[in-house]
Each structure stands twice: as C-alpha cells, then as structure tokens.
Amino acid sequence: MQDICQATKELYPKLVNEAIRRTPKSRELYNQSVRVFPGGVTYRIRDFDPYPLFILRAHANRVVDVDGNVYTDYWMGHGALILGHANPSIVKTVSSQMEMGSHYGFEHPLAVKWGEVIKRNYKPVEMIRFTNSGTEANIYALRLARAYTGKRRVVKIKGGWHGSYNGLHVNVHPPFTGKPESPGILDEYGKYTLSVELNSIEEVRKVFKEYGDDVAAFVMEPVLGAGGGVPADKAFVEEVRRQCDRYGCVLVFDEVITGFRVGLNGGFGLLGVEPDLVVMGKVIGGGLPAGAFGGKSEIMRLLDHRSMVNHVFQGGTFTGNPLTASAGIATIKTLEDNPDLYEKLGRLHSMLDKRLSEVSEDYNIDIHVTGTTGITGIHFTRKKPGNATEVFKERYCEPLYKLLNLFMRNKGVLYIGESVAHLLPSTQHDEDDVSRFIELVSEFFSLVSKA
Ligand code: PMP
Image 1 (cartoon, helix red, strand yellow):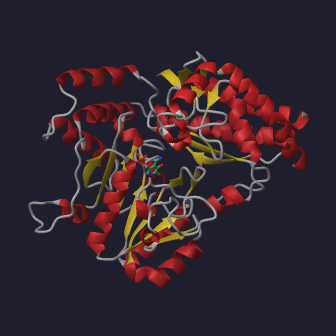
Image 2: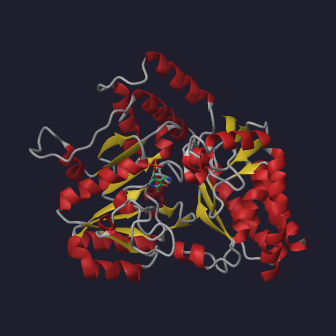
C-alpha cells in the first residue's frame, strides 16, 4: 500500500500536465473567473485541481467543455438530472411553459399537480410546500419541528450534509468538532445541534437518554450522500423511529438526493420506516431549482395561516413556480410510467459493486463499493465503511482519491469529487458506460501499480 501512495506522488504532476494540455480554454476562462468569483468558482465543490472545467453544453449523459472534450458525466447536475441532460421531453414541456409564463406569482394548477404527483408516490407526505432548494426545505422542516414540539435540539448524523443552514452546517466533515464549519456562523448556532454516528444504535440511545426531552427533530438521509454514499441500516432507522416516538421528536428524512432517485418512494420505500416529515430537492425539480418539505398533516397544518393565529412562516419569490413545476411533473411522470428505469439504475449499481470488487482482487488492493440504486460510493478503505468516520478514517492512501478523479477527467469521465468518490448516474447511462468506467479504474490501478 505504501508503494501505491508513493506512486501517486510521482504520477500526479504528469497527469496535471496532461489535464492542462487538454483544456487551454478552460484555463483561459479560469484566469478570467478568478477576477469575478472568489476562488474562481460559483461553488467550491465545482473546483478541481489544477482549475475547474468550464462546460459549454450537455446532452443525455454527456457534457462537453469549452475545449470540445466530451465527458461521460456521473455528477448529473448534482444528481438533479435523473433523466439526463436536456432530455427532449423535459425541454419540450419547459419550453411550452416558458411561452405561457415562467412565473405568475399567484397560485396556479401546475403547483397543485406537482404536489399531487409527489404525494401519490410518497405515502408519508400528506401535505407539502415547495421551496427553491434543499437547504431552504431543511430550514423550514426544522422550524416546523421546533414549533410542533416546543423543543430546541436537533440530532443529525455525522457526515450528513443538509445544505448550509447555520444549525445543520455542523459535523459534516471530520474531525466532527460539533462547531459550525464555516467562519461567520456563530458557535451559538451549533449549540442545539447534536450528532450521532450513522448506524450506531448505541449512540442513538445515548443521545435520547441524555437529551430526549429537548430533541425537536432527528434529521437523517436514508443513504448518506455527500458523506460517501453509505446506506442507513434498517435496524438503525427502526431504533431512531422508536426513540422519536418515545420522546415525541419529529423524524425528518432528508431525501434531497434519495427522493425519486433510489426509487419512486425514495429511501422511505427502501427502509420501510415512515418519517414524520420529509425534505426533497434535486430530482423533483426535473433539473430546475427546487425543494420541498412535507409530511403529516398534523405538523404541516402549523403553516396554515387561516386556522393558526400564529402560523409558522414559509414563503419566497420563486416558490412553487410553474416552470419548475412543469419540469418536475414531467420527470416524475416519466419515472412512474417506466419502472424499468429504476431496474436499470439498480443493475448499474450492482455491476459497479461486482466488477470493482474483481478489480480489487486483480490488483490486490482494497476497493469498497457502497450505495444502492442510483447512488454509488467508491472507497479506498481498509474495510467497507458503515458510517462517515470510517469513510475517512479507514483510508489507506488519501491521495488516491484526487489522482483517480484527475485520471478519469483526462480519460473523459467526470464525477464529484476529489475527496469523496460518488456516482449519481442517470437513466441515460447504460452498461457500456459503466463497463468503460470499470475498465478505466482497472487501467488506473495498472498504472499506479507499475509506477
Ligand atoms: N440535503 C442533502 C442530502 C443534499 O445532498 C443537499 C445538496 N447536495 C442539500 C440538502 C442541499 O440542497 P441544495 O443544494 O438544493 O440547497
């Protein structure tokens, strides 16, 4: 293993030079963009070493950069584009809606329809409200949970990313200090946020025993997304449900990634455990900015300004706009009408799992695959990680992650990121794409082991 790490150091500068040779126009744009944006990017995770790629257009499962390089994309607009880039039926729907008006600023039939298509697939959603992002939806879910319970604390999972809301931007990355992870967020915002390790029933029991009377919400992803694509165990989630029932805490599933990606009824369908509230985003907007939160009427009715003297506030200029609604409805209906699409995503995940373990054996190197239908995590760890701490602490050679990402970019494959490798394929990906991905991983290890 030591040898491999040594090899990454030797290979890295060579691959950087190759990347620079392939992307002169991206480099030019980067020199411009550093004068416009701090760090030269619109979002930190879109940066790469030596500089970000600038994309000109995208179609199906491919993106093309300003230098004309074509890439198979396993990032798919942060996982929002499950039907692929510029899907013709979505383009048609959105274009005709655009002609009818992009935003009315009044109630309209499409929003009702959008809410209904989500409701009919996701049983725990008795009522719903839309937002423009997953971050916003989490803000409102927690606001509701606190209003409903009259309690203050929130429990989250270590490594869970729920957007940059002050109180949830805590314990996202190791070393999990319990303090907000961005300067400018007062420590006070982290004061009421507690965290437990994914899949540790013991830690769940402990946190409820100690703080249960003051826990308003337990927020978790059915599959830890940014934290490495690690699924929650059913037994773990059942225990969380039991503790929430016992102490009167609101169980919130953050299904921003998993909603309509792992199946029509999301992580709830996988686990068979019902949350009280759910937060969604990404896929439900069909590629346009979107978010939503919904759940039990008993909780959601606190938003009802007609019956509550002092209702919980939620709103926003673009909330529930018809353009996003049209893309969202078209996307969900396509998924409803074609159950084989999820079967295909499931097959692609199994293929990655099986064949990457063969690569692991071929090169006598630890490669572990986590995830499920629609989300695949790849780990160079001593054992298969079951939580975020293991995703990071069990690594035997940290530089491998960045080197593989760079190698793949040079070979025409994109995924995010440089420090955690996870794939969010679309229904436009097929067995040939995945085969090529696996062959490239094999080629990568051949290169690393020869260096
Ligand atoms: N929750 C989860 C699980 C996410 O993965 C994300 C974003 N990747 C968010 C919330 C935040 O969503 P948004 O970026 O739309 O604000």
